[in-house]
Length: 248
Image (tube, rainbow, N blue to C red; front, side):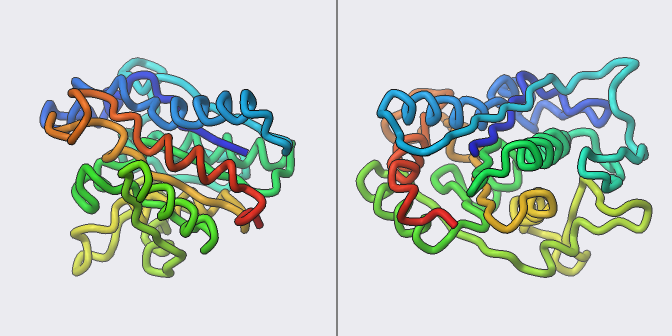
């Protein structure tokens, strides 16, 4: 099952994004939906021999009388309560419900989500790398090999208790604004957010945080004009084509 975040425009909500936070580029917050949809269509055209599900939770994150409010506690589809500490951490909320609902209904063999999930991934991994969380070793090898062919770079991360603990809240089961302890607060944002999704993803789950690599933020990404780069579609498509070698 492929799950792609489809926020068609992200103002940040009541916790409004500053101009420096790329708000003028936030039409790209549906990058995960674009990646998974393109992959899905490509695999179908290639006559992929396995059952394949595409799930795209989609909405806008705007300011208005119905906007989610900081300090609210919401109940997820799974039943776990989430404290809304920051309304610009909306992507993980819609992904969590989409993953929970779809896994319950379709019971996929493996779930892969893709999302422009965190600005932190740009700070942590630069424009060039896509962090991949919780992937099986064989999938990592498939992505590495494909990346060498297509010039796309990846960094791989497993489960780590401090990242999971960063999502705990004293006011609910989880917080949507996970963070590391104060002495380790610089960095880890992409990892903590991925561990929030891990709470809903089940044992056979992989997440790609494509915020940094999918968009040419600085305008000097080699071989790409300003805007969407297309990364990491080529490597991801090739890895999905080798599904039987890594699926759990």
